Image (cartoon, rainbow, N blue to C red; front, side):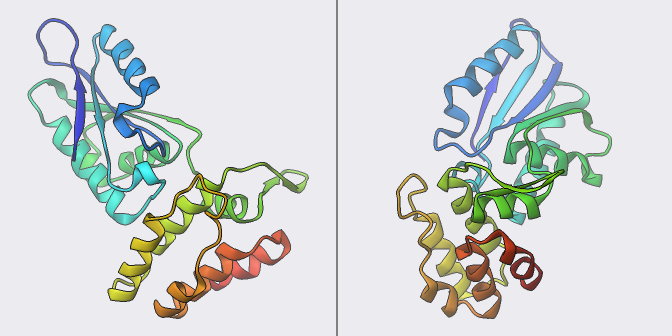
Length: 222
């Protein structure tokens, strides 16, 4: 996993933190992420910023999580880290990964703190928002503006969880080739899903739906 490491002045070991950024093409090179890491290093923290697989494109999959856990475990065991313990911080899907990592038994003795900013805590609500532009509030479902990249990231994440075979691998490759910022980003091609089987077709039905009233049945069928 490519990583940027920001070290404090002086000699370690130091209190340490793994920062997991959200979906951004810049990844660990995002200017705000770098500024935050420099600020933390000035307070005496050692900071690791990994480019976890799929995250730059908004993909949260079992592969992403496995890499996150493995990286955090390895980072905690480096001689520069004080007491083999490390804090986790993340934004958006990075925040979700930080929470999931902290819940992994392999990291039980290594995580000192978790900070999550706007994580995906309820994937069903995120799916409703991404596909229909609606969100569930206490007083019901209401329209809520959402950028196309959220639906593209969702499509990539869910396709990565389909039963692995040649057709689903081709579908994942096609979805990763989409430009999330283009006007046609949400026009998923049905034939690619059909070729990948019934599970993928159920996923297409959910991704192409724009009616919040239909979402519950499509989610249940997925």
